[in-house]
Every structure is written in C-alpha cells, then in structure tokens.
Image (cartoon, rainbow, N blue to C red; front, side, top):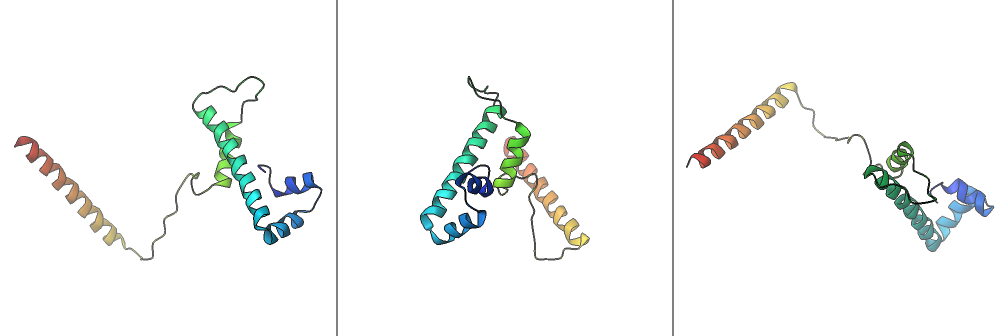
Length: 122
C-alpha cells in the first residue's frame, strides 16, 4: 500500500473509484487499507532508521534512498515529519507589545540567575 491507491487499484484490476467506494461502504475494507498504509509507513521509517543510525542493509537488500524516505515521511505524516511548525494566534500584536514581553522575559531570566547565584553563595 506504500505506492498508493492507484497502484493498489491497478494491481487488483479495478478503478480507484471502486476502491474508494468500497472504503466508504465497508468498515473492514477501510481498516484493511489503513493497516496496509501503516505497514508501508513502518517499512519506510525502518529503512530510514537503518540509514540514520548507520545500520547497513542485510544480504540481498538494497540500500534505501534517504531523500526518498524523507519525502515519503513528510508527505505521509506531516504532523510529525516537517521542517517547520506553523503557529497561529488570534491576537494582533504591536511591536511595542512584543518588546515589552521580551523585556519581561529578560527580567525574569535575570531574576532567576540572581536567585541561583544567591543560593550558591549561601
């Protein structure tokens, strides 16, 4: 299932639409598809782990392609495999508010360091 619905449909000799219709009408079929996707993801993640940790492939196995593994992981599980995180907030902040907040953080950090220094001196 790592190759996708189109490949699975072609292999089974049916249309993609037939796969999707069956997924809509059969909970068991949908669960089987999801299980196949999870298995494929685990295989790629395992190959990536082997490469990342320097674990060489076994006899008769081809070395995985790191870029292909990263691409697959980012597209199949973007929540956990992404280059950046988008953070949304509902307030409009002015530059003055941001600077004031940064000043508070700096003051809190200075107070923390002073307390640690006093504790060590005591």
